[in-house]
Length: 102
Length: 488
Image 1 (cartoon, each protein chain N blue to C red):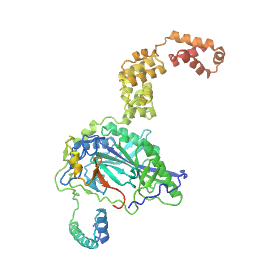
Image 2 (image 1 turned 90 degrees about the vertical axis):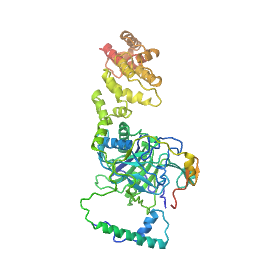
Image 3 (image 1 turned 180 degrees about the horizontal axis):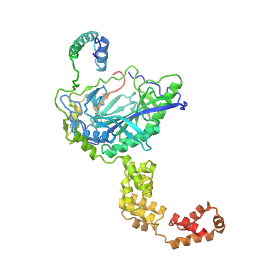
Image 4 (image 1 turned 45 degrees about the vertical axis):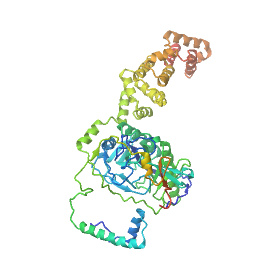
């Protein structure tokens, strides 16, 4: 019934941190493993409830189909936009080379 | 990351007999909305860089997306045209770090897409399953600077976010295609369906239609699926065909050699004609999909779905069947397929309505008209029909009619008879034609004696002589009839 692993491991946390491009120290890894473990403990309590027949809920709001008309609204001024970027060139955002050690 | 495999990691002349290709395609189609999927920025190809951007599509803090109703309608048109069920759906965030999306995630549909489970029939009858057709947003456009524009050697990259947030529908086929020709035929047919729905302009060269291919091979007759590779970066039907052929040959060579195929994404290199591995082996992509908390579920009402279905125009297969019924031609023949793909079938129907020869109309449209579509004057359907009648009534020869048609296409005009007169194409009376035939017979007595004795192949000789003698004005069918009459 339970889809959750017994405990979150230090390796799991390191993997998730890498996916999020977070550079954690050993101490932080230790601490976050404990903290995330506590969060998952709480989820396990919830999982003990009988949810037979309850549809999965992706959203707490009783709303559907919030749509807008396909009508153009003004975009931002380009100079103002590019001025917010660390670097710009040829009217484009300039970013570091993409592949490599990300 | 990114340890790159060598360009050619297998010899490429394996024996393909005994192997079968299994291909599934993912087609990304940009929708022809006025605005983006989640904001009111213009959806327009070719605008100056970064002029169609706002806090939503730039991912600025505090901005919130709102779904474009027209994008939903187009997505449903596509789904319904492909015989899918329209389902209640939700959006997910697909998380990844790449500067083509400033939010660091792409909003897409994951396990609850809007359209599920349909099919597309190819000309010739093969039915290709459609697994799903879901909505998502397009990404920005990156340009790699330095290193000759190649991503691996680039010094840095420049990003234009005009395309970020443009609505897409991704159509995922089942692995039902068995050859590169099948794959091309599927994309051709799907493209004309997408254009017919009005959801897409179908322009592969502008990137509004993009195709990725999942390719695997297996022993012919086997029911199991082999390990597949996903091939990206094909920008034409031709490169799609080449990439599939290369990739299948690569896999067959690997397997024949006792090796195994590694499931991965490979990049098609048009100049080299090869595919190469894009990603390192240990970095299996983990997108950590989760429901997009800023959007509520989409659940089109039954009446909305019914209204969209009702308003769908006839699809290409139905239009081919109509042309076939009106002309007696095979609906899956190349010329009928071409006429419908080029949206010219209304001309055939107009011709049949006025009593002109429908099969002749199809021939002219699939050849002369198809060849003049780019940059030509719009062809007046009335003029086209009257020209067909002039030809079938024998007032113009085939060669003359084709020339008049080319004039109408290049210079416009609504009166084919006037164009013919201006070209000096006068109707050749039966008497004049008979004189011309008699003149040629008299000038070639030896050949005529052989033809009269039953040597039928000389008919072409006489027809050629009459054609030359009349400067192309003779109706060649009438000439054949006259020759046979004189011989009898």
